[in-house]
Amino acid sequence: MTKTPAASAADPSPSATTNEATAQIGVVGLAVMGSNIARNFANHGHTVAVYNRTTAKTEKFMADFGQTGSFVPAETIQDFVASLERPRRALIMVQAGAGTDAVINQLADAMEPGDIIIDGGNALYTDTIRRETDIRARGLHFVGAGISGGEEGALNGPAIMPGGPAESYESLGPLLESISAKVDGTPCCTHIGPDGAGHFVKMVHNGIEYADMQVIGEAYQLLRYGAGMSPADIAAVFREWNKGDLESYLVEITAEVLAQVDADTNTPLVDLIVDAAGQKGTGRWTVKAALDLGVPVTGIGEAVFARALSSATSQRQAAQGQLPSGQLSPAVAPEDREAFVEDVRRALYASKLVAYAQGFDEILAGSAEYGWDLDPKDMATIWRGGCIIRAKFLNRIAEAYQANPKLESLLLDPYFNSELEGLVDSWRRIVVAATQQGHPVPVFSSSLSYYDSLRAQRLPAALIQGQRDYFGAHTYGRVDRPGAFHTLWSGDRTEVEA
Ligand code: NBP
Image (cartoon, rainbow, N blue to C red; front, side, top):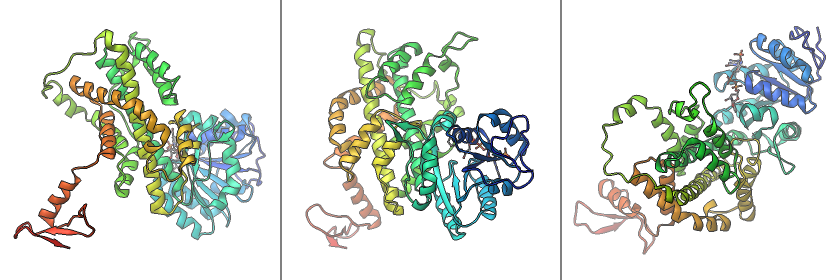
């Protein structure tokens, strides 16, 4: 039986025989993300082939949404592939890892040269590089596409970061751009670069998201326990902050979460949620990749560690009440609260700037390492909408890289430079106050140390080089002449040129 487009809810069973090639795109994997992306394509007038390993899920999808757009359900990968227009475009939205490899192989076996396999899952970029090489050898195109925005974004407009061959973007790009978020008419989707570039950029996006969430968390912690404010009062502060430089999706939803009151207990929900943050791995990947690339992403690193520490439940329980606090300063007095809140806002803004600067450094280092030729302005532009870190100040970041693509650090852009001038005193006061009151602010404080390291005239690295030369004859450079030198530490301590 051949299914026609817009299969009806009354007959939701997938086809058992070959379908006609009527679909512009197909989606494999109909869990939450795949279902929503498939519906998004259909909502934009595309005919969408849908397939899921477990057929019951395809049937349920058709029963729930079959009448909302033009869908071609399939029971087998062969039928699914047969229902796609050439060049065939199949978007995989299954659990990252072995499931993705399994589906790629099934698709590649059923497809023909020139067809395009797109992995929209959260794949590790090195897996994407490997898969792209394998699939290219089979005459097909492989596109690793980072997709951000969660369930809601998948349905209503995500940010999409496709990698893979530029040639495949010619046929795929318009489809992806049609379903992506738009900001000022510009799609939040662009061809990022070859092979694993899209998934690499999505990974760093997620790493930045970790840091962004952590700095918001640190601000909340200080307002709550440093200034003694209620969650409802803090929600109002975040609502206010969302009207200014910090305007962003994450600040907006922070106010929503803090304002939520549990219906059963009439208690702020945030007080009832276990304070152990989960993670699925992309933050950790970002830090691991940064370590390999030698890029100091201290904000993202501290954010990942902060989640790990929050989840070290038994260690925390053992330490509570046992580790000495030392002499702590009292909470902020009510009359000083307003100034304190403004200082916290500025510390949050400055720390966030550092985290983004570090994330962009990692993107540029990855680009250099893998020869991707990435344009950081593109990332800032497509992250303005659809994704979790969408924020007003990404406009400024795009402008900064537009004005100077060779910027040494985002912090050195004239606009951000002058912003920092107005933030740094508050930032220092907050790190001091947090320390004196005993509140943990790992990203606020490490970001300030990073900032001071960048601007320092001299770092203790000179001493470290001396130590390395002492115990390992690793040699050192001199500030007053070129070359590598070694001191004969266990001899007469004269210096020799290495
Ligand atoms: P899940 O990550 O929960 O994966 C479930 C889907 O994978 C089902 O369709 C399942 O089929 C399929 N699947 C698995 Br598991 N193993 C398979 C195999 N060996 N062969 C074929 N299919 C297999 O779905 P999700 O939460 O919708 O996420 C999809 C992708 O999007 C993931 O890579 C995720 O990391 C990424 N992502 C998720 C979000 C988010 O907010 N959730 C955001 C951005 C990206 P079955 O029904 O037969 O078990």
